[in-house]
Length: 529
Ligand SMILES: Cc1cc2nc3c(=O)[nH]c(=O)nc-3n(C[C@H](O)[C@H](O)[C@H](O)COP(=O)(O)OP(=O)(O)OC[C@H]3O[C@@H](n4cnc5c(N)ncnc54)[C@H](O)[C@@H]3O)c2cc1C
Image (cartoon, rainbow, N blue to C red):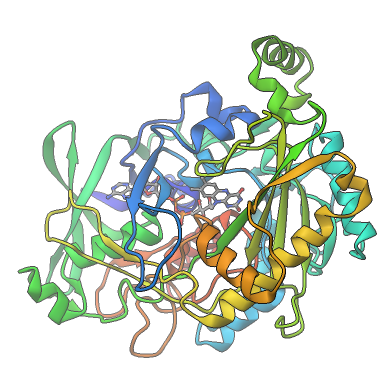
């Protein structure tokens, strides 16, 4: 018997386990399905292109909606390793906009407005440039300027300015509009995941046990209370009991799945799978939100990009530079240039995000160019209206859930993306960058009318790997957790990860997960506060 069981050691879970174990009188066990984060590529920023596609991620097929014309066999990847998304992601550090969290608060997540959550962003951050009302230097997670910025990324940011965007030195200041260079989750040239920043220093504590390769199958419930979990490790099923709380941090796909497998969800759907209903909570698995992206790929007229590092001698040189000085191309996360822009549908704040990479074929599913030297501009709608769901296919924990993201089902999203893509091409046409481009590779077809753009968006859009919202926080009947992240109707059970978000933030989602981990742990430690 332990005091707390934390299920899932991802971006949020590592924070929760580390914070709870700061109390030497509390015993904490963290159960993580994936392996430890020993792989050296994880810690090398440029290793992102390997770790985000390899054995450290799980592939989840998703069900396309009727009329879908996008890529065949669509799927999303989610991390399966200690540190979760923070271990495999592209390290871009963004928090969204203050209005995102004010929207949470207005929707019933009282106590989670921007002013409420800002202290928990500051609590985790060790910024190597900023120290002001929006930033701190004293937290565990390194947030750094890039140690190496590719000349092409600089040219792209100049092209953005040529197109009329103002230079923004800090996308996390509260004002997102403009172009600039992303800060990244790194410290001294190495990835600063939550496994490294929170868990590693905490692992010396005798009251914290971290068990990897441990897949939780079910929460053990009795008389409306979470008593422990059933988990499988190396083929053996085991039980672990907790006398204070079970805390789910398994992410927006697996936290709702675990609740449903345990009998917490829409009673009719659970009954269909022969699962005993412990709590009829129809909101479990609903409200799935994810960003969509379109990748614009161009072929360069010189071997200028990071693609040249696919050749062994360039690779060795970059490796040596990194070993000696901790800088150079190997210290780059490749996603260097960024911008936020308002489409005509924006409703007063930026709704399109651009990520520039001085390379092609860097991300899974994104094309390389025939000439071998290319660059990629990812275009993302930051506040999509399409909403989907996660449901069980079976009562067998080994079967992946039925994911219906419903990307682009709301025509508003298609219109917004079409405009954002058109503006992305407008940036790429500015002379600062255009003079280095031989030809556009994606899109391959001519796009002239807004309808051409809409069709292209429907064909080319893919998920941005930012699922949230499936155990939504609120106070209405379909909310899954309350404002202290306690599962409604069950004692001793919380969800603390991105699944509790009422809506997406207007950017990448890792900083949000860390903030949720910090604030969630605060609520556990100050029960009732
Ligand atoms: C390839 C990729 C690139 C990304 N790039 C960026 C980026 O550059 N910037 C950014 O801000 N965001 C990025 N994101 C998104 C961001 O990383 C995630 O939003 C964030 O990590 C989610 O945190 P979480 O704690 O909710 O879930 P996760 O970090 O996914 O953690 C869930 C953990 O639970 C474990 N788990 C699941 N089921 C079980 C079970 N049954 N038993 C035990 N353990 C279980 C998983 O293995 C995982 O470790 C990226 C994501 C991916 C996948």
